[in-house]
Length: 545
Image (cartoon, rainbow, N blue to C red; front, top):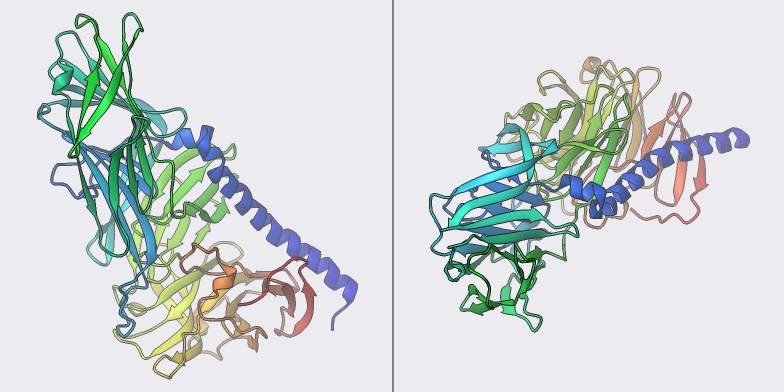
């Protein structure tokens, strides 16, 4: 065993290194989960013009004009009405385990459509109060490609001009959350024309259901298996005198109208409900956090779909890039951001990768499985730069062939200009047709000194040369040793409960040693030859693999 005092020093170094990553992740997660409820949350809310990124998301024929995305709750606005949509990723109850491509997870959706009956088909929607941040989207084009829709500014206010004759409709965000809409009945307008027809759509995967009632508080309450939508009783007043006018909903066979008390028809009348969705039942967590050389923070999170966000060093949102991936069709991959703010993100279970610049614009989208560069069943789980960020490597699964027999732990050399895989090295292999066999994968990877990359597979730790081109034809890894704590295939105990897939942040190197952890223990290894030198317990840690 190595020198104890030196090992203690190195363990402190390791813990500080890992804690830096962990604290940054925790702080950013808190930033999302708590600050979203106040200043940061309000800064992100926006009605975003549809430039193709929302098409048919409401399952309706009319064009979506604007959308509001609070993953996994969405609101889509057409000239005829609005659709509220809940999504959730679930384990697929209809999975056919005998079919290898039958998905383990699937998406369920519940949609509530509110149509303004008899409204003006030629109305104008006016957007106001533009946001400072902007939105970019990666949108699927066929099975193997994606296009970018970028530079879309959001708005805080939408006005439907002349929804009915002399009646306008205004949508805004409520200070306490949710969306507030106001019906502005100008002199000469007839509020009896205002009618809303509610209809529902849903998937039929599991226990989806939608029920709407007019409750004892006079609220329109819609309960689904995924969430609840409450339309608070309207507050109605005379705009000139500010006098409150009695008002309530009437709901019959899904048709909503307003029952109003006496008011002066020569004055403008304001009918002012407030809609909230108080419950969310899927993950909006931050999965991974990176920083650039200027201290800007990049985070990827969410599920339906996953989103990459940039915050400046003061924590102010700069942009949101919505990926073409959700975690029902792919499993969460990984992310690396260089000093200039360029991010590389992967789809995990698909060998797809995107390069996103520091303005949130997609530089390229590459599906290496679709091009059969590495095989359509290969997977990208872990990612690293070399020390000067001139080379990018991805670790995961190499599975050549359309229907592969062998799944291999592989590392791929990525051309950062094109996204092509220029080389790969195989470190372990499994014939999955053997009973009880599961694939071996590279689950964590790190650069180190002496031109090495350190890797962790399910069974081994090891190192390869940064001169990657020699690896496939040379002598293979510099060293490769048993990791002593063979990981289960999915490594579930190391991942958040909601997370589907993903690599492990379980490996770090300094100038003499590298370290792995197994939840309740840290292992110290010799960087030169892979010899296990020491172990140390993690107080309060939870083991298992």
